[in-house]
Length: 596
Image (cartoon, rainbow, N blue to C red):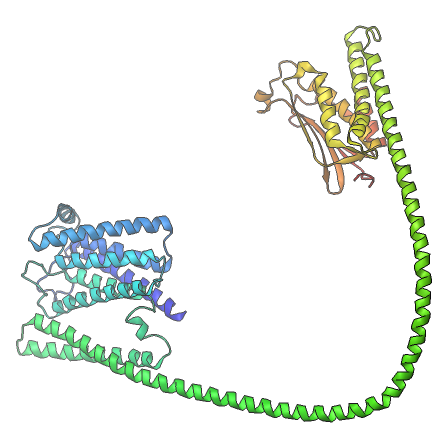
């Protein structure tokens, strides 16, 4: 809304003016500069504590209007404002009795250092105005922004700001009259710049209360009364100020020195005149608004009546046209009835023939349904017989491979040498990898595809078990929801067997400290996953890596030759090798579309 945006800008402007005036008071006092000497016949500097507090209040009003504080910052500022209000309330009581609190005494001493010998304590009037402004600002911050969310809160903030501005304005005018208000009393007159700063702080609070608070809500908007107030109130205030200037000039010419009477009379006259003008303009505006609303209502009623008459006339015309159309349709329907009777007779004959044909088709469908049911039962029996036969075949293949492994385990089969024992272990592991295929099929009851998660977990555990001396090596198997046909699963198992065996044998030689070299435990990782429409098989370790210049694809090693042959000719896979921080073999398997 434009009103809210205008009030935010006014709040920022008045808050910054308050801050600038307070900084100006400190600057002039420090350098001994006397401002407005013509209106400061009884000059006193702004108290150091008052200057700092008005700087804080003005800057907080401007910042809150520009960018509301966050929760923690808002709570801290509210607590600090409450502390300021409490301290100044105590100082108000002390100063009325002619003394000062120890906190104000400390500020006076600090002011002597910063401002010089002109440093003075805060007046009770300034302390009271600060208490009122600090409490009002606490409620402005509580509503997290401008304007205030509660109408009563907004009114209270605006009234407090208005009171601060009126009181401050009275003291400012008393300086212009050459006789500061309350001078020579225990209240101590408030400094001119302090009164000026508090005047703009009060104006900032009135703007911060928002467009819904008094008296702002009576002078904004598009209503007639608001327009009259926007014209009359500034006009009357300007006339009064001009009259007052003339009055002050005449009083000085005729040597009238009662400044308190003059300033008080001026303020009372301004308030009374503004109140009378506001009441008169409000009543005039209300009458004009009611008259405008009555005219608008009557105009709307006439428009509605005109629309109703137009609608009724249109309905009558449409009804007349409908009657004529119905009459013409009745003449045509009488002519068509004879033709319709003849057509109905022909349709009945056709329906009878169609009904006979339908009965015949139903009988044929019943016979076909019985034949299909019988064929389905025959297929189910054949399928069950096939599954039993496949289960028995896989079971026997597994048993034959197990018997072959047992024969390899018999002593004396191979030469009792290190190479012979290693060869025997390799042959056993290769046979076990093939046997596990059939064992997995037999256990899962699936004979077309192999659950690779079950198969590879069992295969890796079996190979790791044959190298018990490598128990310090961590094995990771990462396979989820991947199925391969029997041929590819068998080939993949043989490849994993060879690469895993090589890692156990050569990747982690005695004395190789994985934590010291790699920063991680010794690990072998086997993974199989779907990536971009292909199955990617990876076998990797973080061991000592391949020797420099070693080409795994050109080696004469039987195991790696077997890996290369199986990958290229059985799986039609692309082979990738990485020898950084260990060894990694990756195989991109060609997708045959057979797995599920």
